[in-house]
Amino acid sequence: MDHPFVYTAPAARIVFGVGSLQHLEREIELLGAERALILCTPQQRNQAESLARRLGDRSAGIFDRAEMHVPIEVAHSAREKAARRGADCALAIGGGSTIGLGKAIALDSGLPILAVPTTYAGSEVTPIYGITKAGLKQTGRASRVLPRTVIYDPTLTLGLPVGMSLTSGINAIAHAAEGLYAQDANPVMSLMAEEGIRALGHALPAIVKDPADIAARSKALYGAWLCGTVLGNVGMSLHHKLCHTLGGSFNLPHAETHTVMLPHALAYNAAHAPAAMRRIARALDSDDGALAIRNLASKYGAPVSLQELGMQEQDIARAVELTVSNPYWNPRPLERSSLVALMARAFAGDPPITI
Ligand code: NAD
Image 1 (tube, rainbow, N blue to C red):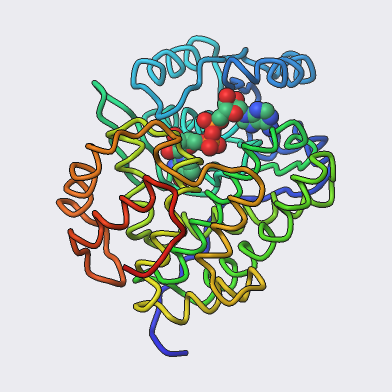
Image 2 (image 1 turned 90 degrees about the vertical axis):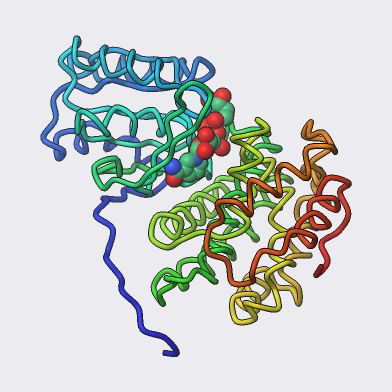
C-alpha cells in the first residue's frame, strides 16, 4: 500500500438483480414509509403509472416534471406536492435528472429516497446534489440526499435506446477512471473502479449488438453501480470539471459531453497518473485506456466531437478560462495553452493525444 487513506463505507442499501423491482413494497416498508410520491420525467410517465397502480393506497401520486439540472421552481412544486399528499418517501424512477429531483426534495425535507435507476449515470449512490437557480447550477454534498435504498433492476434498462446506453455507460466509466487517480483515492474504491470499467467495457458492445441482451444489461448496470459509488466517495478532476463547465455554461448534453471529453482528459493526465492509466487499460483489454474509450465511442456511433453536440468554436477560450479559474484538484497542473489545444481537438473530433 503506497499511501495512507480514509474510507467511510456508504450507507445505502442496494437491491440488485433481474426482476428485483418485485421487492418494491418490501423495500418501502423497510424504510418505515407508508406513502411514496413517485417522481419521473414526462417521458417515463408510463413506468411511474404502473408503479402507482401497483402501490394503490401506498402511492401519494405522481410528479412527472423531472428535467435536466433540477430547476428550483420544479423542486419547490415537487416538495409542495409531497407535503400536500402526505408523502413520507420519494420513489424516483429514471435517470440522473429524476433522482436529482428526489435529492432536491430530500435536501430541505429529509424525505427518504428510494431510487430505481434506469440509466448508468450513477447519481443514486452519491450524496451530490445540483439545483439550478436563475440559470446558475449550484452543487453540493449532503448525506441526507443519498438515496437510502436503490433497486437496480436491469429489466428497466431494456428500453434505454442504444445511443443513450453507450453514452450513459461511458459517463459511468468517467467516474471510475477519474476515481483511480483521485487525490483521496482508496483501495476499495480503486477495486470498484477497475471492476466497473471492465464490466461496462464488456457490456456496452454486447448491448449495441442486442439491446435486449439481459445478461449484458445486468453487467452494465452492475458496472454503473460500481462507478457511481466511486463518484460518491472520492474527488473528481479535470474531466468532470470540463464536463460541468460545458454542461452548465454552454448547455451541452450531459452523457454525450462525457463521451467526447473523457479520452482527451485521460490523455492529458496520463503521464501524471501512470498506475491509474494501467488499470484503466487493463480493464478495457487494451494498451491505451484513452484510445480504447475513444474507439468504444467511435466504433458504435457515439458522438466524438463537441462540434456535433452544438458547441461554438469561439467558446473554447471561455470554457478553458472557466475551467482554470475555479479548478478541481488534478494530477497534472492545468496549463491554459495545453487545455485550449485539448479543447480544439475535442471540438474537431480528433483522436486523443498527450498535449
Ligand atoms: P436523464 O435522467 O436526464 O435522462 C435522459 C432521458 O432519458 C430522460 O428523458 C429520461 O426520462 C429518459 N430515460 C431514462 N431512462 C430511460 C430508459 N430506461 N428508457 C427510456 N428512456 C429513459 O439522463 P442521465 O444521463 O441519467 O442524467 C443526467 C443528469 O443527472 C444531469 O443533470 C447530471 O448532472 C445528473 N447527474 C448527477 C449525478 C450526481 O451524483 N449528483 C451523477 C450523474 C448525473
